[in-house]
Image (cartoon, rainbow, N blue to C red; front, top):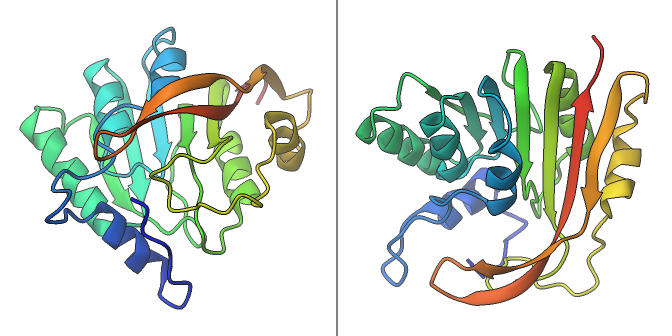
Length: 217
């Protein structure tokens, strides 16, 4: 996972390499649920969820097991194919729709009760705030947008640049420019936890967590 990006190659090619199994690391990265998603969604009534940058589908499968109807999107066709396989294998394919999207150019259709963006980081150009704002507007009243970002560098991260700017949850919220009359902040914090890497590594990391709820149409 520490592969450094070649910015001369298309973004999809980099993410294909990330999610394709390798001889020295045969397991596909991203088949476990992200802990902040499970923490937040465990207390929510199941409905329609959108998983932005779903990877190999750990979050989508976890949500589907709990009755959510999940639309999951990623730029990597390998990740999408892995998710479809896992959903079929576990009898969840009627609850999981996996779609290939480059979010810089296309966005899935639909209205949702939960939009999840777990570590939606990329070394390539992406209008991230616009993507997340579109996700917020895709919420039904009462629906929630959960954004979890890296607040520190893990040893297995592709981004080892110590000078990279990591916006705080409050800064992320400000960039979204969501009117307080329509969206309210339910959580904005920077918890620390012990994380597990793709090859069994462990490290204490910081997450930046923002949870907003749509309160009106």
